[in-house]
Image 1 (tube, helix red, strand yellow):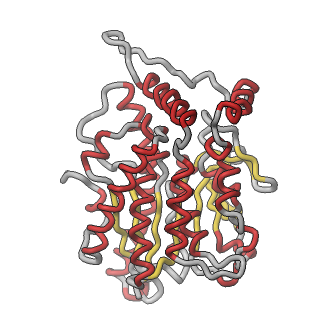
Image 2: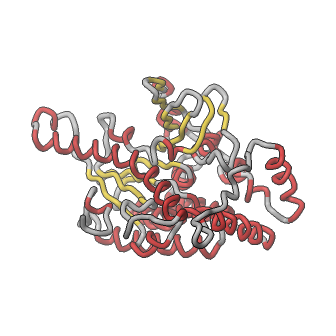
Length: 375
């Protein structure tokens, strides 16, 4: 049976596309088509990766399963989006504010930085958050830590020696500048903890997930006792891949769920387009460097027999949104937590993944399959 690892990019609510893709992948895992050897993620992709891994992990005396992972993944995102009337109004206002921030005054070409002066660690921000429950906003809607604890309530009872699927979560330690990967292999084998040359591998906790999704303009810096202070993994690895192929037990294939499009149909011109493209480039460039290194190792495998005796070939493949969807989405829509929007992206993810999986392994490979158009 071929072994596969899945890498989930971050991108706010656009990760709902990954929810659909992962749902179909897990169905084929349950059918025994391939082994899901590992999964990784950054930011919202880390949420997806955690939930899949948690559903598969043995815990509290139960073995875990692909069906459980599908249920947990979809149930979490069903709670993460706006559910109550008050939450729908709040989402309308916040998403609208991001759209205003992207908008330009005709002729002058100016835009309004709505959130530029809002400090998430400040008193005003905390006061507003404290008042939200009184107006009908569920705690799990604005408190990610609470939602993670509710969803992964048996995390402390994970049976680590029997965990088969590896989870990697990318985050950025901002005080010392460490590129950080929270790695479940370190939970199983503490001696694999590494802090070296501006990179570190640390054990996974639920705080690791909030660290991986901490945008500094919207959430106070995440402090993990004994491990540092964290911002979103977008600034380091989006998502981690290198660690999967760094040892002798590399997978047969790496599947990248790309929600930040590699290409654009034209040069960005407006403020909204420039902000969107800057965010996408940040999310892609670090990932592409890791994938390109895997391609280089594959090339060495083909050219040098002695090298190939100790390193296996790894196929890298891409599963991505439809081109028109990728072209229409903007940075602001990453914060649109409406159920209809999430359902649309998730449905497209399931459709794209089912078509792709039905053709696998007769599908394309990276880097060609990351493109929408020929260069």
